[in-house]
Length: 88
Image (tube, rainbow, N blue to C red; front, side):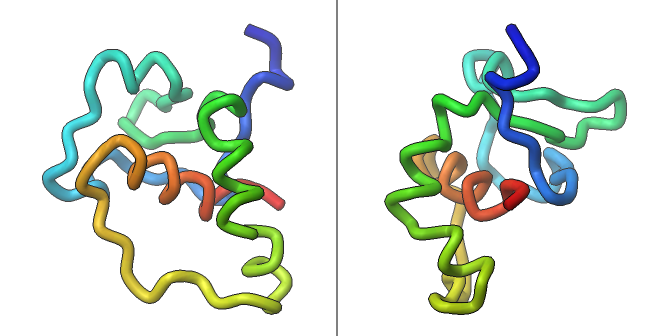
């Protein structure tokens, strides 16, 4: 995969931060994970449409509020969480 196929996170998110959500081997294939278990990047195809749908760019510029609390209970919520944490 080329570098442009990955969307990088602003700050790494450790897998322990996800609570009870289990990252399956299939999901791990869509992530760049560091040696210590931190998610560094995600396949762009998994989060690009969510980034636009959730208007994350508007949140980052202060025109819209981030969700107050996000529960990561399923795969869709997981990728939404990552979309909110992408580099601008």
